[in-house]
Length: 193
Length: 181
Image (cartoon, rainbow over all chains, first blue to last red; front, side):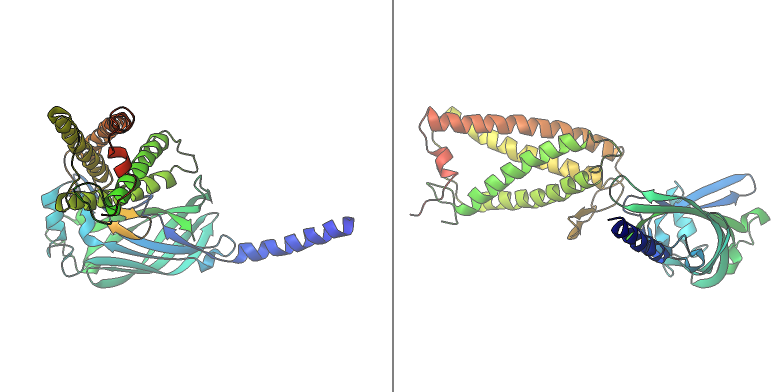
């Protein structure tokens, strides 16, 4: 009896590292919209314009035991930009800035992840915006993970980085220095598949 | 047998009538129950998904039903002139309320431009979105028209029983079985 229990315990213990070592794939929860892609850019140095892209999808793979193997991919519909001002949105989407007709999607594909602390790391990858691809780095934070009340397992992150708009062929030279860069902020929950 | 006749309903009409009846009462109960669920309830997301999916299917069925009702003959209506008029108005009211409930429900979910996923099979696109206070107003219309529909459907059922047991008309029986001629 004791032997049997000990064996079972041993067998169970042997299984645990295996199950934890497998990187899990997550789909970004755009259905429940627990995911946001936002930006913040100076307005003439006086204040900020905040906006978001409302349509996007993506997924990531994440394994707390082996964070170096993490990866993420996202595709954003540029035309879904919203800054609460129809005419400004139209202007930002025009060829003056994002050229959404010619470049309707922006994508991010990670190339590496370097843990920098408990639940923190530096994500590197390639961002394609207005047809131009640049290598970027974004510090990211694991905000939490666990079972949700509806039968799924979730993990949520946030991260932000500064983009120099000229790198993506967006000419801001007519505007003050403060407007040449933009802060990109991304936060999402993924549902484990 | 399948088609309507001047003296009775066909199987297609009968089937659509009873499927609608069961589905609509089910949707009402489901809607009532699900709007009281707490955020941590296991059904919090799943119940509305069923409600939306089923609702869109019943909307499709109702449109098909209306077309069928208009292109097919309808059996004779028994009773006095005033009774027949009341019956007609009652039925028009039922159809009107069904459409009001389902269209307003559709307008809640699509208010921000997102389509409605139907059981993961297909998506009903958002045709009208961004109206002022669309989701809130559509929500009010949805609730009150659903309540009115349940009351009118109750009267409809009582009227059917009255015709059957008191007047000895065959209106209830002819909604149960199609006859061959």
